[in-house]
Amino acid sequence: MSTLAVEQLTIATADCVIVENVSLSVAAGEILAVLGETGSGKSLIGSAIMGLIPKGVSVSGRIVVNGRSYDAADSHALRTLWAKDLFLLPQEPLNALAPLLSAAAQVAEQIKAPFAGADAAAALSAMQLDRQHHRKRPFELSGGMAQRVMAAIASVTRAGIVLADEPTKGLDADRRDIVARAFSTLRERGRAILLITHDIALVRALADQVAFLDERTIIERGAASTVLSSPGTAYARRYVASDPSTWPARPYERSRSAKVIEADHLRIGINGKVLADDLTFHCHAGHIAALLGRSGIGKTTLGRTLLGLTPPLSGTIRRPHGNGGVALQKLHQDPTRVFSPWQSLGQSLEDMRRLPGGDQALRRVPALLQRFGLARDLLLRQPHQISGGEAQRVALARILALKPKMLIADEPTSRLDPPVQEQVIRYLRDVADEDALAILLITHDRALANAMADRRMVMAAEACAPARLLDVTRPHPASRSPDL
Picture 1: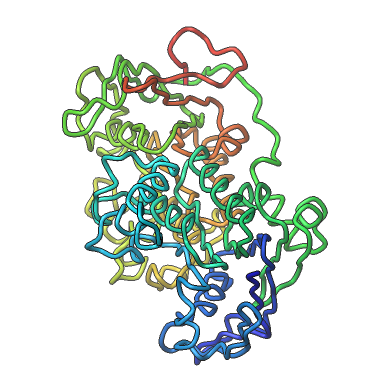
Picture 2: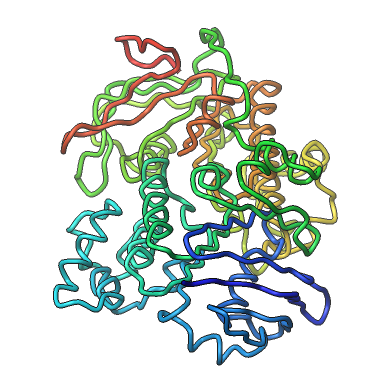
């Protein structure tokens, strides 16, 4: 029976201690979830177990695999356990997959059977990866597809201990449930699973044990049912309370403010392929409209079409005018990629001077930073030197400095841990209320949409037909087009 124990693990750089004296264990047929904010060291614990600590980082302690003890600093010995005893499902699957092998070949490598190809295809199909993608290589796959390829590999691995680092990042609720079922099956087969995540819904669904990591060490651990319902530390209570499923639903009120954008019988697609058709809706000042739907159905394409970055196949869009062409803005999914990696944040903000009214916009930035709880000296740093939550708030400050009339926010908190996600999403709610900004929130998170959005619509499709919009704001959807 497979077991994993980490004893007195310490990870440090020359400048600071990242993780200190961490001990944890997971038995066969059990899932232990490690929760903690971005930068707390969760992923480094997984890397240390696998012998993958990067250069310039020291590690000490013991890793016990199936009763055999290894020095945590002995990366060579730990790497000999790969595939046979240990399997890692990494946070960035595109970097872990062999670049020249197809998805099917990578899964088949893990299967020792006469019909490995058929079994690999079945594993990929179980993750809802269509057969047309099975022969594609990693660079031809989206991030979500690569995530499902890695999950398929994990589902067939012979290793008795599985380490999963953010295995549902970027997946919609339905596909997250599929991955969760795969891990549940692995547990039933006697695997020991260490789940590193900030997905509280996944932890609630899967975990037997939970450990919270904060201030370099484990501050609370115990049975998941107990810890998640009655956390004993202030940190764990704040973390659990940041789960949108615990927030009250926003009450319905009919839109009475001015329409900011209108779409009439819109048909959208990519390279001539129709993704959605007959989309008729409008968004109002001061309101958040949530757009839900499975991955790949066309939500992001709709956002790009509204922004004018992708031409519609047919139909009309009436966009807001004025403000020097910046009336419609986008808040991106990955905040660190909207700023130049070679410049300080302040230097990147200087680019606003090139826009009409840019000098005035730049003068508004200090007050906006203060509004979002950011120190001005943050602008002296480069993007990699700040957290994702800080980067997203700086990005939001830059957008608001331009005084737009509408903001399209495409999964703006999906890469943030729950406490920071709550902070950013509440800022968006305040901005809509106080600045009368219209916001289209593209999200996978139904609970978040229910708690924060004034209107909720779903892009849904039957069989191979183009997607349509459904208004799900009220219990009984109106027969008319969504009034957003």
